[in-house]
Image 1 (cartoon, helix red, strand yellow):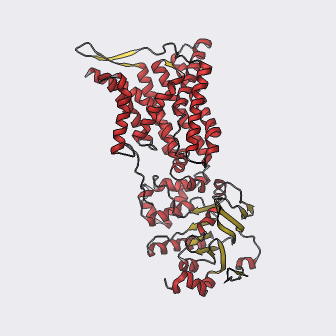
Image 2 (image 1 turned 90 degrees about the vertical axis):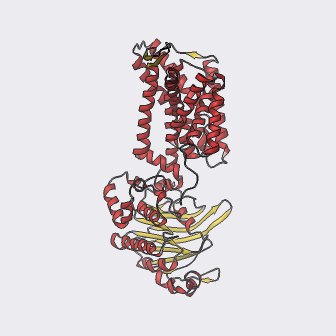
Length: 260
Length: 306
């Protein structure tokens, strides 16, 4: 298979070859438009239970659009999105959010005039605040900085702290699938490292499935079991994290020689 | 001195009515960025509902306890006006969401005209009086010149009711999950939806709360002045909107503060200068404040750290 002259690594995934389970999240032929402008030109993508899957690509490739399309905002004009066996293509956004998928979106979008505590309460609204205390402790253990800032307004925190809060807020709903949109954007390398190690821990210790959108391709591919490469609204390559890391085209386009 | 204290009392009473209406403007603006021009008429409608319920209770049902009657009137007015607020949002505003920015505003003007004319046609164009309800007055002290500072029971009822309901309202918005959802939608609707908040329901709720508080204001207005007419929505509505802008539109404490300030300015101006120019004074203060503090007294500047 060849798309736009770029070879596609047709290494269909380990998980599919294991083949027993249907993917937790499956995106098929999804096309999304902003007005008349096409942003996603028919995207196919799978995320299996227990995996970390990353989607890499340049600015404006459509990565965040895909994240939001999965949540129905904007809605896919064509194609099908299924989650845990249910077709969610036409389900309202706030219902999707109650199906144990959580998203830390592009730009973090924490509520600036709410305290950290209230932001976390918002994250827990889907389960009505049951086991709130326990989950609060859990996310504060993952990000001890949040515990110090619990009663500070979200908008007054630094970018890194806001990112931690955005991830923590997503975790408050106890998601099966955690979707992270560029958690490393604009952050100091040390904080990026910390955030990625948390993601790894969540996946390995709690078996949480993670779908990670990143521009920081090196870190993302090192962390992920599998990856997809998106170019202008189309998936052009897919493979395991290692395969993509070693792929010369990926190296040339996204890794700048592989040194980071 | 006596005149001053007396005007202070009168101003605070009037101001608390403005403040209650202003909350409706500020909340709706905060959450969907729309100036609900029909809100003043919703206030007028609630005063009519209060009047009708009061007359039914006292003349038909023979309720003699004014306190009981007022309580029932207040509850009925709040319930029916909330229903109206909910219904207009569904019919006149929600279908226009996502349309161009002015569409819901124009729709609100339409609702305003509809309401005023509907009430005029069904209730008549004249002032509708209530039988006097609460007439007792407490004389606080009598000055040397014979000017007595009086605090009427009405004023006590109005200020106390306003304070209690604002307290409940404040608790609702700050401490409950409903209020949190409301604030979340106000700050970032899309993100709220991503967290499982039903944004449409929250917007409905905002209209309901705004209408309920306007109904409190309407009932208090009727109690205070004893008359209401179909045209009474406009001027208090504009004043309350001014109060919301003065306090910083989008800010709830700002709405109350703005309401009190407008009430005080109006009353003091009428007492010391000229009653004809009281509105000029109130709106001039608005203009002056906005020149120096464009986002109002307690409004937040537009810039935010992202």
